[in-house]
Image 1 (cartoon, rainbow, N blue to C red):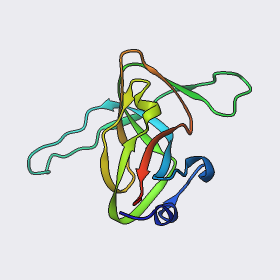
Image 2: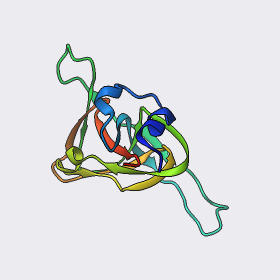
Image 3: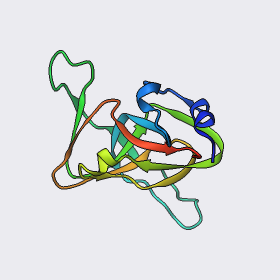
Image 4: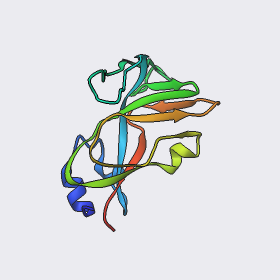
Amino acid sequence: MPSLAELTDALDGIVHEETQRRDDGIDLTVAEVYEVDTPGRVDFGGGELAEAELAPYDRTWRHEDDEYQWWHLDAGQYLIEYNERLSVDERVVLQVRDELRARGASHPTLHVNELSRVPLSVSGGGLRLKENARVSTLLADG
């Protein structure tokens, strides 16, 4: 697992390093939320594999003088895309932030060497999620 310095160097697109950098890793921020519009396909041999068609989920202004918009997510499944990009040789752990989980949303813990879209589950009460919110953490070697 890379050190915190190596992990920071391997990331592009960090929104605000001082805020995102932690003792044990780097927080990742949400750039876009998607819904699946039409289903993809997964088969045994891969000959019929097809991507799902995605649609960006609508955002709304909370206050007219805000700098960033909000997603008003109902209960369900979404895909999130990060502002940050990662490219490392060895895999690192990507986990949901406690702040997101405590508000009824979660995503799986993954071992990654690059960042792709991640499934986000939102519980029955829904979630208000602001652009650039810190939602996940990449863990560094302590």
